[in-house]
Image (cartoon, rainbow, N blue to C red; front, side, top):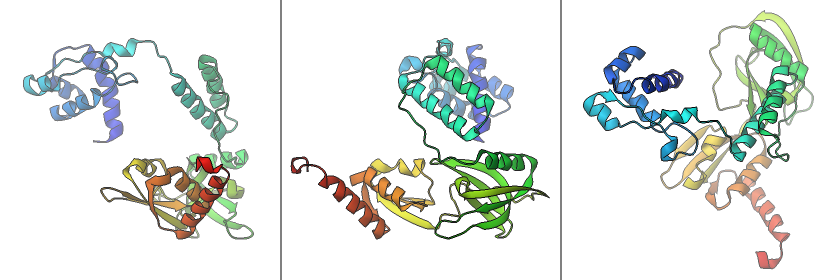
Length: 310
């Protein structure tokens, strides 16, 4: 069962069950075109849904034992959805940050700017010190790529490769634009390489639209960037498990009392900063040069404090 299909069904189930107390599971299954077992699985998800906070009065209430044994559904506490929506300060700040990011990425989009203005008017400025850092890109190049993606046309790009002088040119078939860790990437099929490649937009110096239609190459892999040749494996404690979900990875190995996470590394400075942030949660670093750089940076930082703080 696809997650998007289940989500669409869950959104319909809430008002349906609220309006029909005691409805039979088989009736619901027939109405939604799924099996009774799937409806029970949906109820298992809904019992953890409701308003933010997760307290008893915030969540939907359904007795799954009664559903399984007696075959009918009493769906309660759905009136939480009728309560006025109020954002906590942290929620308002997160929403504003996300909307400002959309405005930065969308460039001159009037719709995005208008939505941000309405949001700011509704919740205020939240934290005026809040900033979203996105590496700027050429709006005309971004617009040209977006148009080519929508039209299914190839483009000729001129780009800079890290560690090399000059520029390179290639005809590619653009597929999508991705924003990862503040950088916008173009995922495209490279005709010279005959393979999927990722290009950072801030490294493009020119984009030329072509009349050539793109071919069907499927979809590019997720979670990797072919223009990043280096890999770094960190072995960390379970407390640092979040890095495997927060950052792009090429492999994650659960070793029981520790986790081995491998990242594509475009910047050694980023790797050093991550190690310093994790601190004692890092048990091993595959690249001793990165480990030594982190050790030197930590030593230099500690040297700036009085001995009483050491």
